[in-house]
Image (tube, rainbow, N blue to C red; front, top):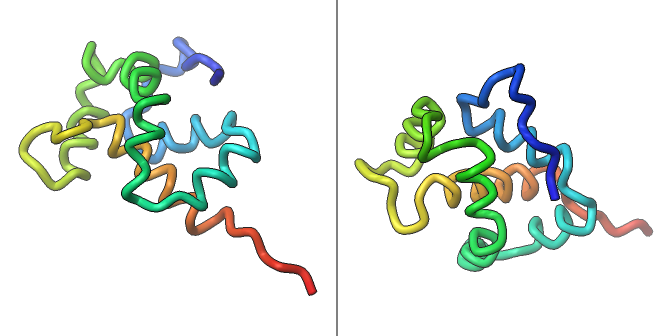
Amino acid sequence: MYQPVDKHRGLPATIEDVVGLIMEDLPLRDRTLMSRMEASDLWRINDAMGDYILNEFRIWTGNHRLLKACIEASGKDEEGEFGPSMVIIRSIWERLKRQHVLRRIK
C-alpha cells in the first residue's frame, strides 16, 4: 500500500510530516476521490487507513510526540471518537482540498 517508514530517519513527529509521507504514495485516483469527499464521509477513509496510520507511525506504541500533536490538533483533552488517525486523515483531506482541485479547461 504505502512505503514503510524509514527506520533510520526515525518516526515523524508532526502531523505535517505524516501527511507528506502518505501523500507521496497516494495514487492520483485516490487523491482525486478523497479531495471530492465531504468532511462527514471521512470516517470511511479511517475504516480503510486508520489502522495503517496508527501502526506504521507507532502512534500508540512509542511515538508520543505525534500522539500529543494529534491530541492538540483535535482540540480535545483525549483522543476523541476516531483518535489520531482521523486527525491525520482530515489533515490529508484539507491539504487535498487546497492543492488538488480539478479545473475545467475551456
